[in-house]
Length: 212
Length: 159
Image (cartoon, rainbow over all chains, first blue to last red; front, side):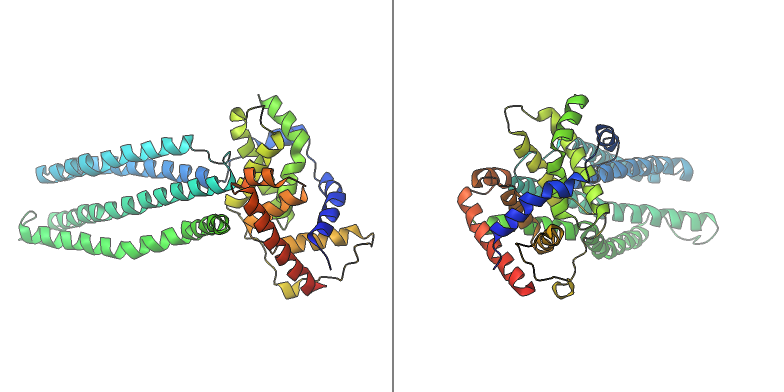
């Protein structure tokens, strides 16, 4: 019967020959350093940077809305939205980005590294989920308003008061419906792109805990 | 610093290749993982203290990268019954067959088990395996027994 010691003998007598064929020269190793890392932290960092950029573009777009509609009420709504959601979120995202830039857990042992990665990934997924969920009613509300405004400008809905409680309720309901619809979509999206990976990390961590 | 790093990697690249060999089933994956490990080592190099053992440091980063990395291509896991195992005579000089059998058997282990087996095959003492994995030496022994049992069952099936 083969024992692990047999395998150890096979390994020790063959591995050097086996990997010897793959040896790289210094110049080849140097060339590798010019590539982009595909580690989860680097990926999260890049995604966060992309989201910061998207947030910034949205912020500029919303800041431009009052100039387009030339409406005092819309300007007030936009300022409130920018000050109470976009600006704090943007600062929060930048803070998280800086944290990820400093984060490096690979010099820890395997168990600690897994634990740190799980915490970071869960934290990021929470930010991503709630951030996206928060933006949905805001964008729903603003686009609902924009659609009604345009319809009125085109001559439709002439007797429609843009700022009475009925209109506000309709737009708020529309925003709420969008949020409810986006909830399962966001869950699915996060699960599809990160959920399985997170499960894998948790399984590995559990495996190391299991034996204690 | 880059020169010192290149010198270190050049001297010890065998460690990275061994980790790649254990975790990857094809050359493309091997190359991708080698590159990722090298990048992570480069990132960690400024904080490497020379009093630490270079191989322990390298194994720790390489194994962390392999275990927690996202593989671009899904690892091909062939069904056990589809593997063309041949009865192996260990006195036989057909070393390539023996190595193939070893790799195939290891492919059935979990990522964590692979790391422990690799360190065991590399003749690392339990204390060092414990230092790299983050579990105590006693539990390394427990885990090794389980892995041995798993491999024994696997090899019995195929012989």
